[in-house]
Image (cartoon, rainbow, N blue to C red; front, side, top):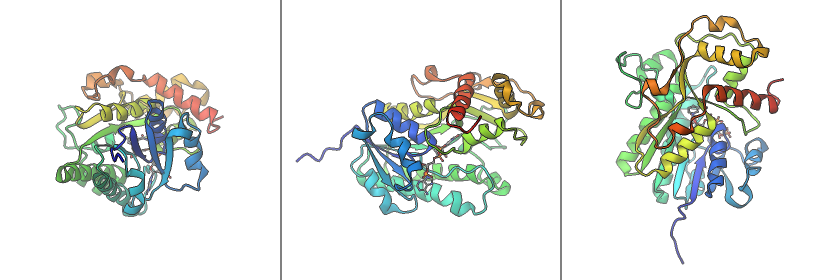
Length: 327
Ligand SMILES: NC(=O)c1ccc[n+]([C@@H]2O[C@H](COP(=O)([O-])OP(=O)(O)OC[C@H]3O[C@@H](n4cnc5c(N)ncnc54)[C@H](OP(=O)(O)O)[C@@H]3O)[C@@H](O)[C@H]2O)c1
C-alpha cells in the first residue's frame, strides 16, 4: 500500500474566516483537496458558507480545532502536503485580557500548528502574519521604506497596549524560530487591511472597520496609514508563495498605502449617498501606491493581479449591501 502524501492535499487553519474562506474557495477551484479548520463544527455560521463553495462536496473536509489544544490540530494536518496557517484572533476593539484573547492563541497556536506540521511531515507551511508585524516601528530610520526588513517595535506595543500588533509580531517570530530549529519550510505573507467580498455570515475586523465608516463612525486615527488590499489578491498571494518554491521569507501584500483620512475620502467619493463625516478628510495626504513605496510583494506574477483601491472599496460596499449589513 502506498503511503505517499497527496501533494494536492492541504490544510487551511481558520478556513471559516474572512480570508480563509476565500483561500479555501481558490484552492478548490485549482484542484486542491482541502482540510479547513473551524472553531465549532456545530455552528452553521462557521460551516455553511464553506459547504456551499463549488467543489466542497467532493474536495473539502471540515475539522474542529482549538489553537491551544495540540491534539485537536493533529487530525486536520495529518496526511497533508502543505499547511496555510491563518487562524488567529483579530480584535481591534478594546482588549481586556491580552494573554487570553490574543497573545496565547496567536503564539501558542502558531507553535502548535507548526509542531503538528513537522510531526506530520508537511512539506511547506504558509503563515499569515500582517503589516502589523512590520509597523508600528517608530524608530525605523525615516529615510528607509518600511518593507519586509522592518519589524514592529515590541516594547512600543507593550507600552501603548497595542495587543493585536504584538500578537502578530510575536507569533511570526515564534514561527521563524520554530522553522529554524526544526528545519521546517515556512514562508510568510503580510497582508495590509483586507477588504472586498464577504463569504462568511459574520464580519471580521477589517470589514467591520469600513462598515462603521459608512455608518458614520467619526473615530479619527492620528497618523494611521493603511495598506488596503483586496481579499482575492490576499488569497492569491498565499497560493503563489505556496506554489513558488523559490519564494522565501516575508512577503508584504498591499495595493496602496494611504492615510485613513484619504481612504475615508475615497469611500465618500465613490459612495456619496452614505454621507461620511467630513471631519475625517481634514488631513489630506497623497495616496502612494506600493510601486513608489518600493514595497510590493516579491511574489512573481502577483503585481499584475492587484485590484485597485476603487475596486477594493466598490466590492466591499456592494458585498456589505447584498449581505444586508448596509441598506
Ligand atoms: N483582515 C485583515 O485585514 C488582516 C490583515 C492582516 C492579517 N490578517 C490575518 O489573517 C488571518 C485571518 O484573518 P481574517 O481577517 O480572515 O479574520 P477572521 O475572519 O476573524 O478569521 C480568523 C479565523 O481564526 C479562527 N480562530 C481564531 N481563534 C481561534 C482559536 N482559538 N482556535 C481555532 N481557530 C481560531 C477563527 O475561527 P472562528 O471563525 O470560529 O472564530 C477564524 O476562522 C489572521 O491571522 C489575521 O491576523 C488579517
